[in-house]
Length: 325
Ligand SMILES: C[S@@+](CC[C@H](N)C(=O)[O-])C[C@H]1O[C@@H](n2cnc3c(N)ncnc32)[C@H](O)[C@@H]1O
Image 1 (tube, rainbow, N blue to C red):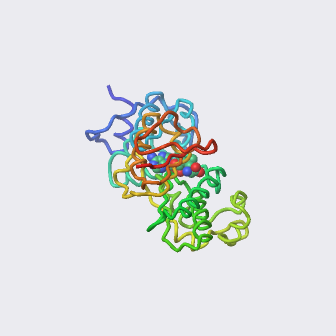
Image 2 (image 1 turned 180 degrees about the vertical axis):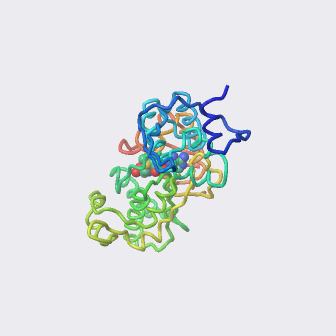
Image 3 (image 1 turned 90 degrees about the vertical axis):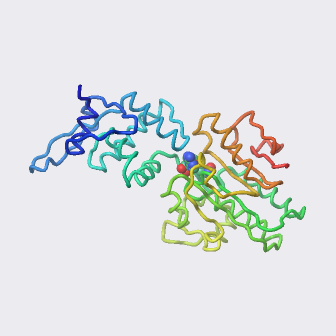
């Protein structure tokens, strides 16, 4: 029997279906929802129905997303996934979900297309000084390290899952304050890493709506931002030079050359992963710290996790661990 998938793929590949190395998501019969007008090429317009994502298809997409990014979609997110996929397949000429699924597995364009899709699916919500007590804690921690004479060569900070850059730039403003007031001229730098490439491109430019600066204390706004246009500000070139952005996947950390970090900040990202994966990621991050370094995560993002190199910090306002060995 010829399945819907087969017929769709045949249509797309001019009659032939090659052997596929990937699981094929099943399709439902087209439903009239999300219908779209399509030019038939014969000068007339017809209504083409958009498939609804079936439970089986949802399961295939969830599996793919989790395998490649660690992000675990819950059943309630099916509508969100379907709407994002619908937007994307329409942009690509109203191809079917099955065809789109296949396109993410083969051909030179698959990597670029995957990157486009991921950017649509990840939650990039962030802000400057998002969790004030975290930055108060880090301010005190860095000052203490300086006072104890524990800053030797460089001071390196890693913001994992940094979205559009507000977190790494906040860390840079805190570091700048601590190092400048101590009169230290040691090298310090922040690396922001995220799976979304467009987010990294945005972050590198450092241009933000003025409304986003509400959480930045006035003296830091004054010191580090200037008007870009009527509605936007740009962070100073000094800060942009201190902060670099890299595209990376937290479930493939082996590829990241980040070691002996003084601060690793991983906030509001682990919540999208299953518990076992959160532990695995944190175990990996723990090994990237310098002795005396700090791992900081969003409050409550993991419970009952321990690591032989780390000790939890006794502070109710933050969830942080210090590397003691
Ligand atoms: C909600 S934002 C958090 C931003 C920032 N850390 C904060 O707390 O404001 C989560 C970020 O994690 C990123 N992310 C999700 N999965 C990722 C992965 N596997 N590797 C790297 N970054 C990932 C998303 O692209 C998104 O920008």
